[in-house]
Length: 216
Ligand code: E4P
Image (cartoon, rainbow, N blue to C red; front, side):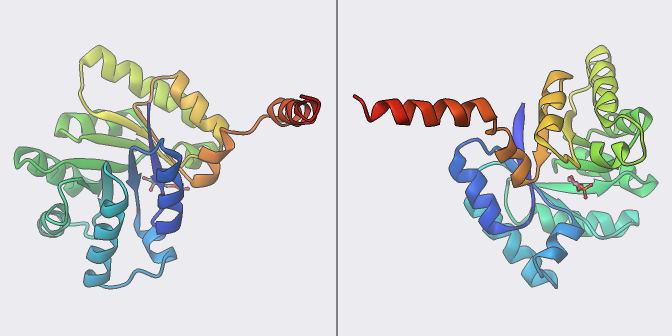
């Protein structure tokens, strides 16, 4: 399973990259706004900066919602760097745009996916990635990981090539569960990636080794 970091914060992207386990980055309008990125020039510059740090796919989300504008915006985003993947919402014009991008050699990430039916449509349109939001599903008292498992089974049975990118990750446990049920990629906040490091027995064991090492 690949690890993407789910942020537009350059320091966090660098920290995850320096850990040596980072395969890519996902952003969304909320994450870009959080970093104070405003206006087309600043948006383009920020994606260039991210692509400088990480040699892997970087999802850049369109802000448009009608077919023609999604295509125009997506073409501009894709021109920034070969690693840019155009992130398109799961709406009717979004699906049409994903098909257009696929036919024209531009890779896409279909976002805001909350059901297996939506994931089937994304795959049929040729999306490179489908992003089910598991944390937001959990927030509604449904099981987000179960959706990943269902999509994984359908894609495997049907031979769909779209990669399942588990999004809206809230914890290290989410990452482990997504790996267990066959997600291709997990996009995570830095704290969830670092959460994988933690186990109290590791801390206790290391303290004991360091203590005993003084007797060596
Ligand atoms: C990433 O592609 C998604 O936009 C992101 O994971 C959504 O996460 P959230 O539900 O924590 O906002």
